[in-house]
Image (cartoon, rainbow over all chains, first blue to last red; front, side, top):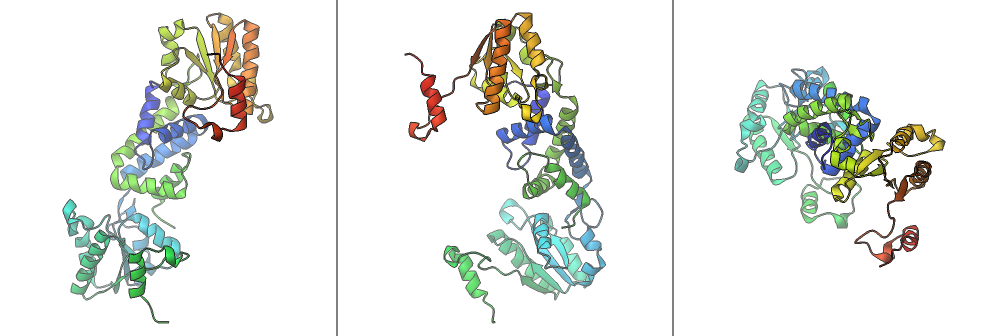
Length: 199
Length: 199
């Protein structure tokens, strides 16, 4: 279909968003043009600002437009000697949403993956090493994903903590709340049995 | 969750897209920041250009950044005396994709809806009236949606055509291709019986 070339460019550009195919892109473009041009312009503004100005926190590597993010600069968070290691900034959002954690974070922006050429320095472990060496960290909570790579990464960081004499812990894996036992997969069930706690 | 305020603004802005809720917006924002900043900037550029520069064709009211769209300026399309009336520019895309139609279009950008205060002039029927009065139109194909409003709009335009002595036709409604008869709803089946054609 040949249409307005500017419209085609917009549809093509919208496909850079995850989960957006040709049909969704068309729907989005027409929706914005017909019903929400102001919203479209605001989105353009927010996008160009975010893409150029958002960098990484120099302490925890999460996304922020400042040098250091608001979590790392928070004195209460600093007083708590915990650092929670996660793979992505989205994981921080998930943990913050629980309201259960009041320490600082460290974002790997990935996981160790030697086959893809991703080594310790690519996921910022040199920076973590430096932070552990300062001596204000009491516990490192390893909240990487329960995948092969995530487990390997957690194991590697646990060794790093040991070298610095810092306690390392791994988040619990087991039966998710609200789930039915018979529907839970075997590996998860094994983890929940091995990780049982005394009442 | 308190995060980078620029990131929050981006997530909020992304929600102007249809079908994008808080979770998708977060996923999109992180995806662009982590993996495709260049794509994000291109999207920002395409959006701001499209939102400010795309207007309506002065002949058929579809979206275009020129005064008259490429379909209306095409001499072959002009020679064909047909005008297909559709509700939205997306309908043009669908009809063009079939490759079965080689006439011009007229986009209502909606349908008659007296309860919502949408009258004939709001859907450009004054412009259509003018185009019919010129005398180069032989047939008006009514391809509005098969809804109550779409049918009413088609009926209204058919009257307009009659007043100008121009033939009006309605696209066929019936059993969709590849469907199973037993699964087709009653109204559609009635239409397919009433609209039967001699072999």
